[in-house]
Image (cartoon, rainbow, N blue to C red):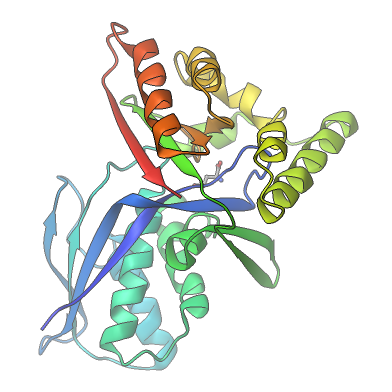
Length: 298
Ligand code: HSE
């Protein structure tokens, strides 16, 4: 029978941790079902929860991840996959990463767990390569490992799981506009002025210290990104107002989720995160832009 794996949405970038820090939510998430089959190679027999995703295993990230795992092991086992999408694509919620992570986990189970979960990160990254052209780990690593994860380096890959040292809740507002990661990346300046660099690594160190010392105030003071957020946020209608409203409603801080267009805010309690949700939604009310909101424990 099928092995079922669930992998959650992730927020990566976390403000000053641009491209190096991400965290996992509880939900939403994707499920991948996998089982051995008589048919040679990888087949995708069902996709639920979304339209227009390819059933071609060379085109769909779940097939790409599974194939890479088989190739590494030198196996030609037949594997049947099904994908149950629980979140929109192109939203900044790490949607392709969740599918890739769930596929890596499920296929590993079917094969008798030849890989550790940490090792699965490199296979799930192949799904990201397929989806976005770059094999980044800041979404797949937290989706597989949970909690906050630092991607310290890529050469060689050095993934540092930090867990969730303290209670945190995340509110995410997804404005349903199209914003491609490629556009969101192409507008970034390639050079960082020294002054801004210094503030950014001060904040990132502050955020790390705040997490590990369980210091909410320090986390709040550190949740900034003065380099990329100002460049990117012009692509997200009402971004400044939504972020300001979230902080006014009691959030510790927030920013762009992934490459957008979703906006996230972190809070110290569920009650706070709910109040933040209402404040964020109120800004978009009457704007003519449809939104979806999520509140989840980190
Ligand atoms: N960290 C990447 C970016 C997105 O901000 O472009 C990861 O999906």
